[in-house]
Length: 176
Image (cartoon, rainbow, N blue to C red):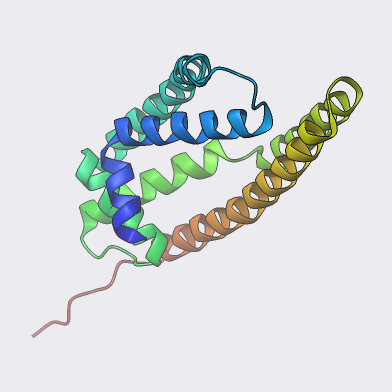
């Protein structure tokens, strides 16, 4: 899994391609009468907005890390819970952690809003579409919001733990 994370972190085009394919498959599953070509084109255009957001966020994070490879290395250390020992790596990790904590400060309100929004989509789908689409959106919404909350809590806990570890004094080399 670590190789997949590193590969996706380095290559945004691969994230884009996979998101287009996954979204197209989901739409075709829920609405089987649609043309696969039109769904693929629509998802490709829609996914450009998501990729633009990812690029903007990564640009800020790369400033803290120095480069894409530095960002991938810091992200790997953050996932493993490894506290950097070199002063410049500690500062880069501190900047990255602070950026991410600042960016996620409204995560609870955003999760509640997303759950309400997904619930509204399911209700409106039930009123206007068939049972297949309603069940599909309900399952998708429950899995997506559940995954988002669980994974978001895990990431937030990792960030707080790393911030606490970085605020302690850096390890000292033994004197001779």
